[in-house]
Amino acid sequence: MTSTPNPQRRSEKSHRATLAAAMDLCSEHGYGNVTVEAIAARAGVSKKTIYRWWPTKGAVVLEAMVGIAGDATQFPDTGDITADLCTQMTAVLDHVMTGPRAAVYAGIIAETQHDAALARDLRTQLLAPRIAAARDRLLVARAHGQLAADADVDMAVDLLYGPLYYRLLLHLGTYSHDRLRSHIERVLSAFAPSAA
Amino acid sequence: MTSTPNPQRRSEKSHRATLAAAMDLCSEHGYGNVTVEAIAARAGVSKKTIYRWWPTKGAVVLEAMVGIAGDATQFPDTGDITADLCTQMTAVLDHVMTGPRAAVYAGIIAETQHDAALARDLRTQLLAPRIAAARDRLLVARAHGQLAADADVDMAVDLLYGPLYYRLLLHLGTYSHDRLRSHIERVLSAFAPSAA
DNA sequence: CGAGAAACGGCACGTGTCGTGTTGACAGTG
DNA sequence: CACTGTCAACACGACACGTGCCGTTTCTCG
Image (cartoon, each protein chain N blue to C red):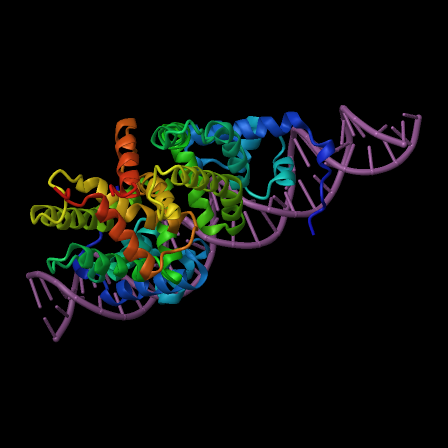
């Protein structure tokens, strides 16, 4: 039994300082080379305080990541499915799969391979909402006749996002904006309504 | 400078025992919960001996993994591109993305996020040859008119394999054989020669 | 406004794993 | 039959983890 701390009395200053320090240090030195002690030192916070509110380093960085990705990766609906997918996926690419944050995001995903609780949090807080949003947006497009009536939207989501994570986690290079666009167009063409 | 050991005098018995122990323990307890000491103990080998021949635990497990995946994931050429892709990708699915080995493979990939040398070895020893083989097989199919003349085979490889790794590493569930087949058919349909 | 409760920073501690150093036994080669 | 180098066994320092304690600060409630 962990003694449950009282969220109302939590120091919001320490909270924010910890998240900022975690993201900064991970961006600088890489996720795996950052220790909880280092985060505590940079944030001007006691190590004990971090462990009071988060179970592991991964949980801290995940929360920081959710904060960053949170607003920036919403799904628009302009009526043009291709344009909307480009907008959202370009944002994903730029915010979490390019530059120093790419390694941080990859580091968290790596951590989920041996931390089941973190894997669950990553799924529920970051992945699932976006997958659902993509699915919904594709369903709308299908209802509007922009995709085939029998298009498998789950498969479409896999085809759209799969290669991005594949290239990120296997170090195969990231997509340029141009390549991302032709990628999206190619996938949508596979689900286009029949010419009949 | 590491004192270079003499490969000719290497104990082949210890070599094999170490690889087997590493794969067994990782399958049982998960990649992250296995230590070099445990591998040494199980193999009846000194920890020093492991460090003499491999730089890290990841390198040991990678070599074991390469041995397992080595033969089983060759690319056939029966003339039917769909069938050949099904054959090879089903083998990949069954050998390294299903059951206990899935977590081991995911564990190695996780390790590459903070071990550049291991990332390089994974790419050169495991990924690159298979990506090249897939690419070559698709080029043959294109030359035979089974794909559009201007089909982007690199994009096709991304679309074929990306979702497999995406689902593996993000814990989104693995494909069934049936779903894998329809996945392959859908991707190929996106590169089908024009009906004209 | 004051007393109490709870989070806070600072510090020390035990634990586990890492990667290396040392030793003496053993096997292959000239 | 000596020489060279790998082998198992054990000990070691370094480092990060996660927790416990203590005195201080901050917020809440009577």
